[in-house]
Amino acid sequence: MTKTQLKKFKEMLLARREEIVKRAQQTLDEDMTLDANDLPDEMDLASSEYLQSFTFRLRGREKVFLDKIQKALEKIDEGTFGVCDECGEPISAKRLEARPETTLCIRCKEDQERVEKDFG
Image 1 (spheres, helix red, strand yellow):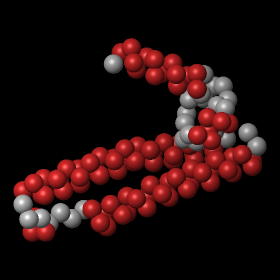
Image 2 (image 1 turned 180 degrees about the vertical axis):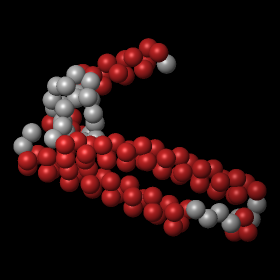
Image 3 (image 1 turned 60 degrees about the vertical axis):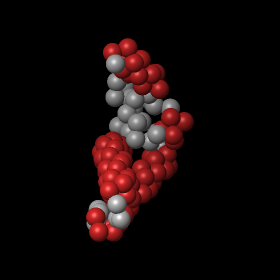
Image 4 (image 1 turned 90 degrees about the vertical axis):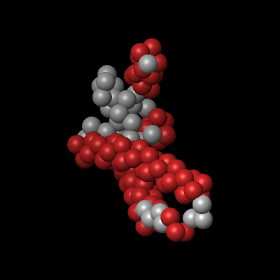
């Protein structure tokens, strides 16, 4: 992979990381407080609690995504970015453009998904 390609993927990963961190900060600033006095009845309170819980679950998934982004950035620094963790073959540029945090080539990912589908 060329230095230009690596730079492009690094910029993509850093931009994605920045966006996730920004949304997480927004959640902390705006969505962490739930005041029962602001909500007139139990249904409003329950609805607000549900939405808050849903938001926190989304942020939890984003934490996993942040870990994947960090690992991809480390691979760029180590010189192993774009190599499938499973088979050691290069990951296609098209796949990396769609999911620069990926660790598997399309063939290995499809195999993984088939196994997950078969075993639940």
